[in-house]
Length: 261
Ligand SMILES: Nc1ncnc2c1ncn2[C@@H]1O[C@H](COP(=O)(O)OP(=O)(O)OP(=O)(O)O)[C@@H](O)[C@H]1O
Image (tube, rainbow, N blue to C red; front, top):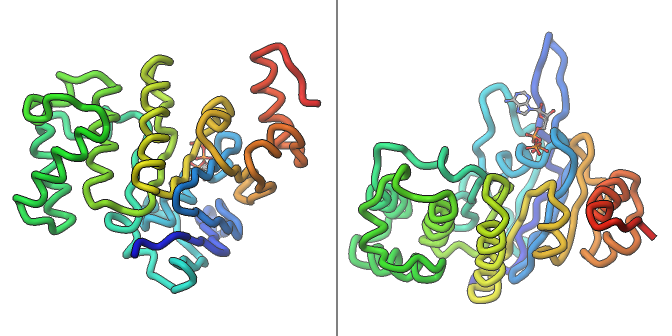
């Protein structure tokens, strides 16, 4: 049976500058539950992306995970085993995530190979995943290069590839940031549909409270590497308790001429 809760505990990420250790993520703990979307929000530089990268064992050079544990329904697992089968990920700017000289088929083959899926089963899953993300005529799309596709199509392919291993959890780091508003809406609808149909747990990294309002069930707010508030989404919008949360909600409401009550 697929695990239902992925728990990250006491995650600390550091870097060293002029002999001094600097904490970029400081004791972060999060629970990501099946069938729910947890939004990780905070100002630019608060540590959202590095938290995801640390969990997926893909930290940039010079940045290290100093501490942290990860468990699946209470059983300890190694961070190095999360990426792929347990957690897949999608990022912002899908165009930069694809190799410009490779077709979608070549990208899909690489993903299937990394997952160790035999060709027949892999191809069947690929077609199913393309259909799941609303990509019609998969055979045609598989022959295309990134430059022959729109940003929205590329993001759909990235989501389809992320679904290939049928992982129970998905990390989505600013998945709609570089897309126009209409395409953003399609991608958010798609992510919501995927959570419902597949019962996945999603960690959604964003600085856009409109995206949070649209998709999240729960919200964790980061500031300077720490989680400063964690609550169900309605509570965050109706009664934000930390000043950082109040600022984020106020900035969002001001777009509609409203204020935090
Ligand atoms: N490779 C790196 N080496 C050293 N410091 C880094 C590195 N990458 C990021 N940082 C620093 O770590 C902190 C957290 O960065 P991170 O990218 O996680 O923030 P973020 O909340 O995701 O921001 P954004 O919303 O702009 O993507 C920032 O102060 C950033 O400058």
